[in-house]
Length: 351
Ligand code: PMP
Image (cartoon, rainbow, N blue to C red; front, side, top):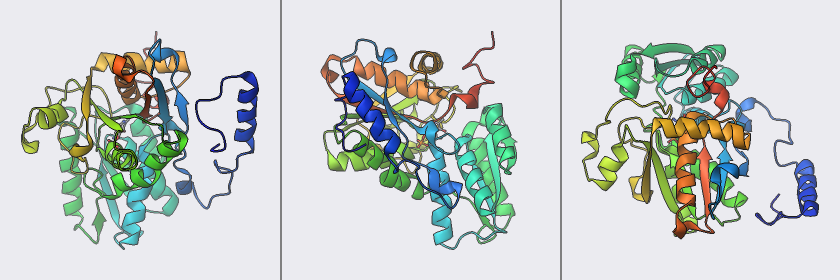
């Protein structure tokens, strides 16, 4: 694909030529792989069109639902297990336990299934039924924690289990919020893919913040290549902890969410260790309603069946695209997961 410059495909003939290049391109999954864990990444970058309306910026979605278990967290699921294997921290009998809002658990679960490890996941009961069923289908043991305790409840339950099992070397807790392998895999893969796909033309990166791994890894690499790249963090209006810490100067251990929110996967309610706050240039807050509405529009108007946090990130990207100062700019928004994971939720009402 790199033989064709991006954004020049206008005429019908050119479009046909590009299609030919795509079908004969063997670098995109045109291999026999040893196992499924080798297949993450190289997700497509696709322009958002109708939801962007008459804005004069180019908005490109990076569709992370092209990963093997359909989310951005497949990347870190494999990366954290790879790093632990390299450090000699896990054996087949080791109890691996992780608190997660779901997608990291699923990323770890397919990796552990493919490599023969035992995984226990702790997750708030408010996370979607699909996540719960998928984790079990992949052979993980699932422990639900009280809704009102949010991610903090899942974290303390996982720590308790880890200690009860005698800590290392009998148990291993990847700790996605602290594990350097999390931002590192985004430096090595996601960031490079964005740089390559846009031919270095990216001006603005938009990411929701859960662990902060995606925005940190991508933001650091993109800014090091092109210092003018602006990194925009998206957080739920109900959990404005980044705004409290970065904009209002509240110490990181004193930030507080205003209440629960419905944007699964972002807005953990605290400032994660892996998040590099220094690379964030702007924070955009998005309400639950805005995220749900845009999630539905992405499916109906773009044919992109996306999750709730995709709706949140795309809301922010479209708002940025409409600012006069961003006319002509290239905005890349990371769209983390698949709408099918939310069929039972209010994202897709049944009527
Ligand atoms: N959206 C969803 C649905 C997620 O599961 C996650 C990861 N928890 C994110 C966004 C945020 O990604 P990160 O953890 O890299 O900040």
